[in-house]
Image 1 (cartoon, helix red, strand yellow):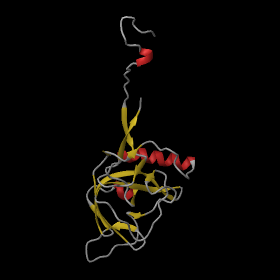
Image 2 (tube, helix red, strand yellow; image 1 turned 90 degrees about the horizontal axis):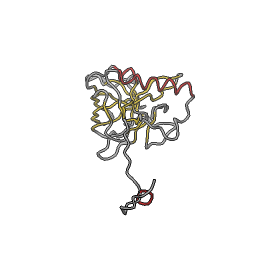
Image 3 (cartoon, helix red, strand yellow; image 1 turned 120 degrees about the vertical axis):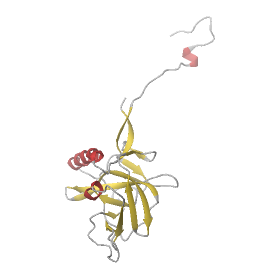
Image 4 (cartoon, one colour; image 1 turned 90 degrees about the vertical axis):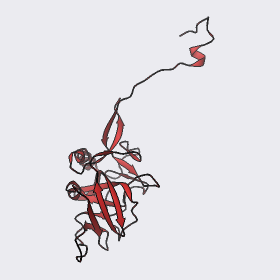
Length: 203
């Protein structure tokens, strides 16, 4: 490529502008960050897949002294300790600044502070006998002590703080279990409560 003798512009010196087109698609999120002021993020509690998929309307969950969550009964009944809805937890094999599918969910008593408003709720199910995060639900949450009112919004595109790119890998998980987790992650979008979506570049 040569410059035009009649012009002072030389592409080898001044460079040239090129145009490219990228096509974006949406996929269920594989990793989300921690919440910050004005920025939604992962809640300190996770919900069981069966409970999440049946959550078609706003519901309130309550916690027992061990961080296990159950559907809150009408007064004067007290919170059950069956943990059927989910649990407060700390991811055992990942940093607290981000949550990734495949993480093990272990209960931690009794509860933790929940940022009100839009939130990304980790969803887990048993994989090879272990409760593993398979995806994230988008919901509005309103904490009241250890109780949390949850309003699912269906499959929703994350405005920020969520990605389908898992830099550094999925942590301590076997290839077979990871395949199951990713299949469950894809299927989550078809449930009534939906899943959190994130953009992915496909070209």
